[in-house]
Each structure stands twice: as structure tokens, then as C-alpha cells.
Length: 61
Image: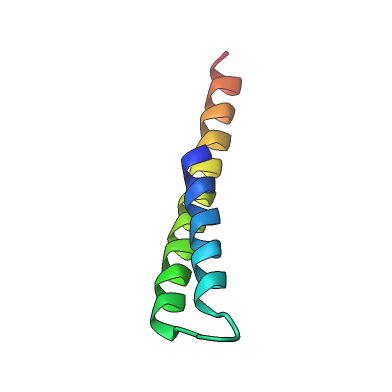
């Protein structure tokens, strides 16, 4: 989960750096957004997996 959070932060920073006032770069912004979206989806999936595993262990034990 920490790795997914790291990738999410990296994607957000890439988006912020690409959309500066002096030299905006739409292509770099799109790439940063794509990285941030995939990292967010991965983080949500990992959190959901943790909840499912916790529920299974709770009912099994």
C-alpha cells in the first residue's frame, strides 16, 4: 500500500509540475494524470482486498 501511495504522490507531483504558469505541457500533464489515476485505482483495490481478507479471517476464526 505504501508503494501505491508513493506512486500516487509521484503522479500528482508530475501533474503539478507540468501545469505551471510559465511553461504548461499538456502531454506531461496527461501522463502524470494517467499515473495518478492508475495509482488511485490500485490503492483502492488494495484497500478493498485488505477488507475482504479481514472479513474472511473474522468469520473463519
